[in-house]
Amino acid sequence: INMVQLEIETLLKHLPENKKVLDIGCGAGYPAIEIAKKKHLGITGIDFSEEMINSAKKRLQGANGLKGSIAFQSGDALQLPFHDNTFDLVYTIRCIINMAEWNLQKKAITEIHRVLKPAGKFYMMECSTQGLANLNRVRREFGIKPITAVWHNRFFDEDSLHSFCKDLFSKIKTENFSSTFILFSRGIQPFLVAPAEPTYDSPINKLGREFPNI
Image (cartoon, rainbow, N blue to C red; front, top):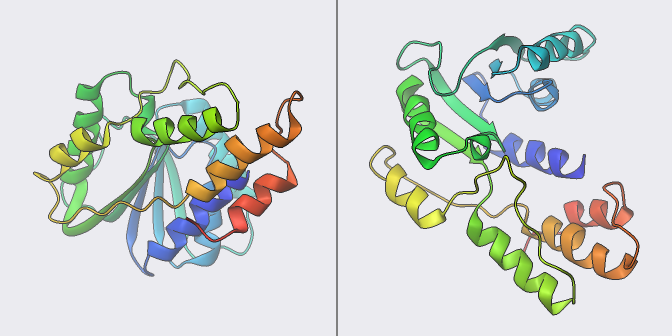
């Protein structure tokens, strides 16, 4: 939950009011609903899983205090069910890394570019092989075994990603917004609690989310 909250807080800093927004891989709808409580936005959430969309719709029925509007529907990131130039903003949260091949990831990014308006922005909150390597260097210094990506994730190579995106987008910026949280939750906490297993709800994780990023 700390990681999800950090992602939401970071997105809120970059989402201006009164825009048409697409959330790809919305899952059960928690981030989109929390964002709509804070911002006047028209959000469309899509997910490949009908089960996730049904959960998102149920969550939306019980949501109170929404400033923005939300609609959830099933959809495929590789073939987005929208016309060209539809959205002001598109965001993904650990979604595109679930595609098994680089070619599929490139196709998804191309589709996102297609549905964005000419001055639109794409915020991708994904994971990279470089980030994982940096984390594992710290873990080795702490005497902790390295982490490997789970089987259903294909982390981005940052150089390949930037090289591909520069032909689609006029400006690219990287913000390592979760580095401190990852250090606390995947480095410091495992070191302090060993040989016990770290927990997601540890106060150390919350501290990592609230601590200034480095």
